[in-house]
Length: 220
Length: 415
Image (tube, rainbow over all chains, first blue to last red; front, side, top):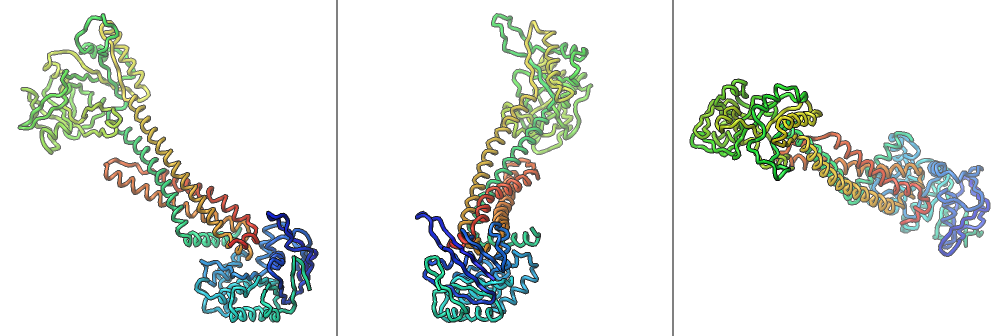
């Protein structure tokens, strides 16, 4: 489903060029549940950003569903993220002035789905993550675990091919972490492809495959 | 872009503006002040123009004055007595066809001491008394509020009749408005009041010095023939005339002037005046008001524009992370651009509308306090709103463009 061939990413900083990724090759099949570990600065987040098309590789090839991606056109990339990718972040990244329902609806706004349909789908998604009774709450009125579940509902709303989660439990306590991981497990069981980054070795057991990164390279 | 998406983004922008209350209020105030000043300046100069023009018109825009120039060029010239214009001159003028652009003449006769002590009952009034012909009311653009104007036979028969100005009438008869049929005493002569002159406003004209301290309403007009008999003279102090159109005031002036100089040139020199010079002065004053006000409005609008630019720029910086999130979930560059442009437009539209209201209200209050008739021009309202919108969109464009061009991963890294 996803194939990276010799992908490198180099940043230019005040100290000269910094290689965040060097010659990473990776294949992820549909319905895999992949965990990525590694110390901070090892390139995990850069790898996830490139998979999610938030960032463009400096060199190498990226094939999505066997098709090389058009990484030049910003508009095309926006559509790609909107339809194919569901993002979950460590800091939840909900829009503070919108309530749970409106936050979940947001990706559908950018794919021109009519309001009625949007609201209906968003309600179902919130139901699926167990927050049917919190739809009018704003993020500030929700606990961390609840916010992350809203974020997961948002990532699912457009029925993406893959869910990318960058330390989804990094800001949560043990109980909430477990809830969130159970949710991912359920999604995996219904056939979703999930890639997540974690520092917590206890969570690796959820994954079907574990990748480890060091110095911008994948190490088995 | 689908209309639905535009509407959706509009609401997102609306909520963002509402949420960032302090930011929004600051820029709304900036724009409002600018637009209010544009509106006030525009309306004041427009109303002023209207007002001055009306006042000038009430003097008779087409009317002109000719009188003797008392300053002799030649110090050795013989000292000449007399006003330089006589009944004979007037008759000759009327009989000749020297002056095709003049449609009416009226002599004005007054003694060296203009102000005469008038009496009615126990009331006195120091009033300017002039002897005039029957065309004077027409030339001076006077309206008769009660009674009638002079008739031809009033002049030829030296009837003891008078037209009275509103101030003089008030001084002599208290608050009675209609004093037609009452008598006024001028020395030992009893004059029957046959008409009351409508009040003339002189606020703007005295402000620019055109009235020369003379109260046009404190007057008494009597037939010039009567006054000449009284004063024992055949002299006319000032000759008033009416040109057939505003464009022909200058030629008419020259025609009368030339005729008199040809007739009496070896004895007298003449001076002539019209309202044209005062129209120029009035326009200069108004141009000054417009210029200063326009400059103030320009500065105010610039400050408002810079305010919006700052607010939008800091809003983009504050919300960089949010922009990253929106891009991650599928917002295109143009969605972000549109949202920030709409935010800037909303702020400036609200600011512009409030500015118009403030401007309107302050003009209204000023009009009430100073009793100045204000001409409310819709065009300035429209102009204010359009200008504010343009400024908002221009000032908002650069920050919005910057926001739209942010790379999603860098925007997300921003905290």
